Length: 150
Ligand code: CA
Image (cartoon, rainbow, N blue to C red):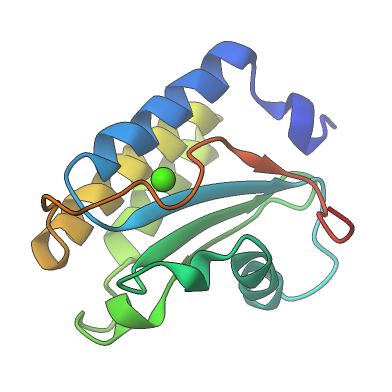
């Protein structure tokens, strides 16, 4: 089993990054992708930990979104910040999650992630449009690994 760092080729990583850039060109929301080798705990607990670790809770409008993937055990989660939860209906991320998972099931990981990011951007835009003072607050590069001691 490939580990997180070698899971995507350089070309695929670039595509994911471009998807994030394209999505963020439409919204003040921040999208971050994190890949773990494996996840020994509940995936939502782990995603919440990484969310904090990568400072997603520090965006101006509290509208960061984490796409969390654990390679070895096939765990996936989408976690949005408080600013998003305050304005959207329950199940807001369901369509995005479905797009990602249906592609993952076909083994289309980069495509699934990119399409999911695209969809997340579209959905965020409805509530958090890009404005003149929108800044890129968090890195668009994929984050890797356990990160406990960064
Ligand atoms: Ca960003």
